[in-house]
Length: 324
Ligand code: PBG
Image (cartoon, rainbow, N blue to C red; front, side):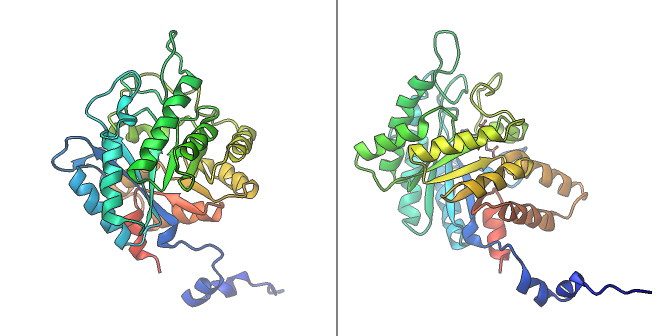
């Protein structure tokens, strides 16, 4: 009988050996916490399809931001849930709009101890729920939307965002926002571009989280899940327009896109583990069908292994203290 000479199992035989040879690490600094803040809320409001996640009041947002920072997270990403919506999403540009107010609150609370990021998109603010304004035929008007994004970026920088994150998938959004930030005296405010953002069923719970008004879909601006090459075209354009960092979203169903973008980009790459990925795992765990904490850790590790420098995850504050 010929016994094997090559024994890869040797390096798996103790926890210390496995730790020594691990190729991928997951640290608190790799995690960015997305947070929702609801205008007029006196108390945090639970989101039923995202157990454990809430729409914050202004007070609870500050507190949760401080907790996340204490846990060592790499950053925070804020989303606003306004009381009123209109055709142009004017609450997004208004310095007194909920997102801008919340950015000021959180920046006052945590200063430069973490990276404060802001979602830059109109869907939370429009009465039709699209990521841009509509033309006379009801189609999303790319260039009219860009003008509003530019003003929104400046408002967010002035409210204290270190980084703005355009997520609307309008053509030219990064370049227009960069120019507006520079012209308004904010050359150091960064842009994290949602570069490869796919039209996805996995955003379902997020729509509850922001009380989205959307009927229909976003297929004329978000990418088709059938396409990888197209993501590289989006990447080239975002880099040319001045993106400081780029993102792939959703995460787990698009690991091949993440790997390809990470191999191509010469800037940091993020992956967004979205609401549906969160809900799916929480639901299975609640039924006792999956080991929750191990499964969370495994998904996050897989995103790092696929090439993400940092991860947006609703589990950031929970997971960070467990990482050694
Ligand atoms: C758009 C935006 C969405 C998400 C982040 N930014 C929703 C969408 O594109 O429909 C989804 C995030 C998630 O599902 O966790 N502002």
